[in-house]
Image 1 (spheres, rainbow, N blue to C red):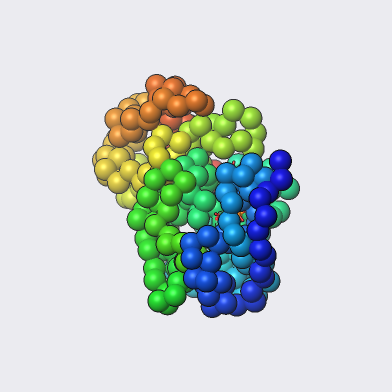
Image 2 (cartoon, rainbow, N blue to C red):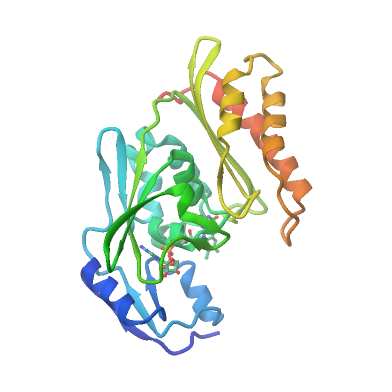
Length: 289
Ligand SMILES: Cc1cc2nc3c(=O)[nH]c(=O)nc-3n(C[C@H](O)[C@H](O)[C@H](O)COP(=O)(O)OP(=O)(O)OC[C@H]3O[C@@H](n4cnc5c(N)ncnc54)[C@H](O)[C@@H]3O)c2cc1C
């Protein structure tokens, strides 16, 4: 199919893009990588009066080291995140997750700002913002505001963005951890995940000092499981730990049945991914960051 008719503007500043959104009275759509938006236009599931192309705005594509955090511009393509040595060393779980995002052609165009704004409950980058407790900077007609990732995602395909707002930057705090794992199951390689877990820990000897944990594919938004983080830290690290950990995780989620999988199957997948994640995270390996 072909899209319905729309006007097209390509502002060169964020301010001008916000003005164009305001002028469109809620009928405008921002275009970033176009990898989610263009299919919606082609199927006429979205019929914006105007497309506001962000790709001519300079200075929205960057990865900056701010010491305790990494700041990423909204127009940064998935492929840059996937291949960035800085991301690999400071945000290793995010780096590892990028290979699961769609296919190469899509990663070449897709952007972090577009992925977060689209808010697919089975997309990796929204999950990783929740995992790292990232802060999302948003520009609108009233200036700049920042939102914690957990508050940004409201429901499936729904964020807290107002129609005249633009995501401009995402800031990820760096975790002081030394072991991590990212596990995912999708029906085919490159598909959206059926279930996924991100885990990072700081270990001293036979004890965990800290743990960070997020899951996706099992709710309408990605979930950080803070109670499970505390329970994991209290767990004896013996051969029973992966099984007990998988039970902890299963007790924190209750996925619904949908066209892709039953809730029971998603829980089953998540339990297996949890076992694998903890085994990986506890195995001394070349993972030191
Ligand atoms: C076949 C296929 C498989 C895929 N598989 C995966 C996958 O496994 N994992 C995954 O994570 N993703 C997957 N994707 C989605 C891909 O990652 C997209 O690139 C991403 O979701 C959207 O990014 P984009 O830059 O292309 O945004 P666009 O398509 O340009 O925009 C998406 C939405 O976000 C809005 N928007 C864009 N930028 C901003 C901004 N800065 N501020 C506010 N609103 C904005 C747009 O108006 C639009 O509503 C897949 C896509 C396809 C086509």
